[in-house]
Image (tube, rainbow, N blue to C red; front, side, top):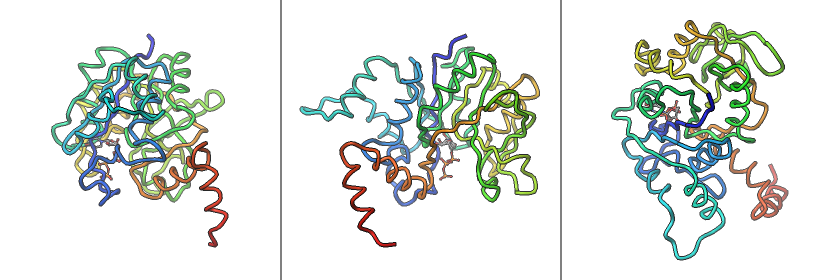
Length: 278
Ligand code: UTP
């Protein structure tokens, strides 16, 4: 079955980005020319997705406004590009009633997904080139859930969901187990889940079976752990760039690195960096 739908959870508090996120969603934080969530929607579109569900919640209305077609008298090229995308994809919204974790947020997508495999893209994470496009290729071959991972330094494993797995072909691993935010001693590898997934609809039953985990929240990794006992799951080692805009250092890095590559501001930023003495 083709992957035609994408789900973008964007309901988390964003406490690591305070006070920037005190009165605006973290998904609306700018990276060079665009808010984060626009990159995520564009990734879904350029990966061949036609229907997108964004899961919002308290304090997130600006996200819905951003995806209205623009009625500005004059538009820039980024607004025009988004309008073109809005002509071609359907964007739906649903509100997570309480911030009870990523697993709980995904549960709200069940009716939308309707028994098809779907792409899941965290609304606060940017990938280049579009990771979802690569995951869909892996899904086409293995026809089961695939989760994108990246190598992280050992001292950072406790910030991520970590997979235990064995390689079956270049960059593709069969998952044996998953652990949410393990200590260094508990970590079965340094392959961390980065926020892009293709999931089968069986995940919803697994979420229902999942008890609240770390922080009293329903963790998606715990639900995926249950899914892994029912069907094969694969991990795909993504070799592109990934920025978690939910933390300030990654957000600043994303702005600098992406600005350096930008036709409009790249030269000015290069000049600035050359002039700074550190
Ligand atoms: P995070 O782990 O970054 O949590 O969520 P958070 O609450 O958004 O941020 P902090 O820790 O307070 O800074 C990972 C993804 O899951 C979504 C977030 O929007 C983000 O895309 N999420 C998380 C929800 O949609 N709902 C939740 O209840 C929790």
